[in-house]
Image (tube, protein in one colour):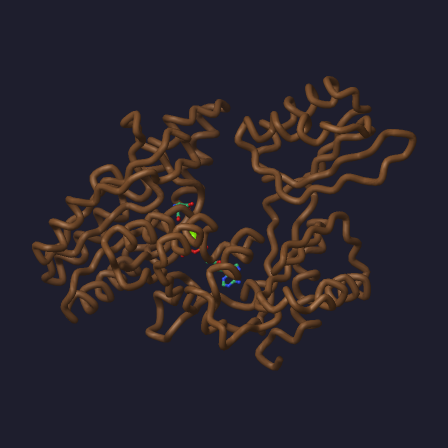
Amino acid sequence: MQKYGGSSVADPERIRRVAERVVTSAGRGGPVCVVVSAMGDTTDELIRLASQVSPGAHPRERDMLLTAGEQISIALLAMAIADLGREAVSFTGSQAGIVTDTAHGRARIVELRADRVRDALAAGKVAIVAGFQGVSTALDVTTLGRGGSDTTAVALAAALGAGACEIYTDVDGVFTADPRIVPDARKLAALSYEEMLELAAAGARVLVLRSVEYARRSGVPIHVRSSFTDADGTWVRGEDVLEQAIVSGVAHDTGEAKATILGVPDRPGIAGRVFRPLADAGISVDLIVQNVSAAGRTDISFTLPRDSLAQAEPILAELAASVGADGYACDRDVAKVSLVGAGMRSDPGVAVEMFEALAEAGINIEIISTSSIRVSCVVRAGEAERAVQVIHDRFRLGEGG
Ligand code: ADP
Ligand code: ASP
Ligand code: MG
């Protein structure tokens, strides 16, 4: 199983190069199934196009529009492979039997009926499947959320019993930090599913969170590697007892916003009342802090995806009124910076070092949250990149480490 991301198929030349790669692996014998993303920035452009035509949300039609991006790449890749003398057949998500729930824009795969893909592979053809899309139990076209082609690939790898899922992208693997921000970031040879889950949740977009969840559940190893070289990339698989770095990497997420409900009456049941309507609206809240109460009132702050703000604001307004709070405030100008490592479980000093590194750089921490293998801090958006760099330096994660 191989998956090629948008930048790997961004133009005709690159599509032909991917075709060559695929034909080479098919030449080694064994079935080859390929998942592809939309070319380059196609998905972003389609989203922009929709907003130019209509301000509305139109979830069903938006999915219809966005799935067109991946349909272009599967057809073009199939043509390029055929030109190299290898039989290839393209499938939309629906044709590949990727059945999802009906949550447009963030659908979950509920079943895989990959018979057509299996038949094509059995007939010696290369099967090319459109990433990021499926068909709902109500027979509508759905998308799996941004970056969802990774999930398509892992799900198909599991269904087809592939030994591994190769994710080809524009970097050499998973690094100790985003190599675009930290030039001396180091490529990791291997990571556990748990570490990768935390990195993905913390914003390292090299693998989408759901694909890692799916891989862990189904036990499919993932190999993240460059589509431009033959070098080994990064393996993500079950926990390796031998090599447990205390800290494996730093991630940042600039896609979040902070909301605060001000002056909430401090009494039992309030947190449930505050977060229930947000959960019901499908808005995933991440870091939460509740301040110490003064005179029976407290502020509750939390982060949420910035693109859910428009949906969240009316809910917050109503909420603040109904629980008798003083009001609410939203702040788009934040970012989350996280440090992840399996060895943190047994080393209490790690979080403190991270706070000290930020303090020495004069970066204020607004919210802190921890899990057993992650520490996250919310900082001003403009300071996120510097925060990643100073933390990366502090833990000597780089090449010189
Ligand atoms: P694709 O189009 O192949 O799916 P993405 O843009 O979704 O590619 O993901 C690859 C990008 O993820 C890289 O270009 C890199 O900038 C970014 N990235 C963020 N954090 C990391 C990390 N820790 N290791 C590697 N890449 C990272
Ligand atoms: N094309 C989709 C996106 O840009 C899916 C993907 O690339 O994985 O989010
Ligand atoms: Mg991606």
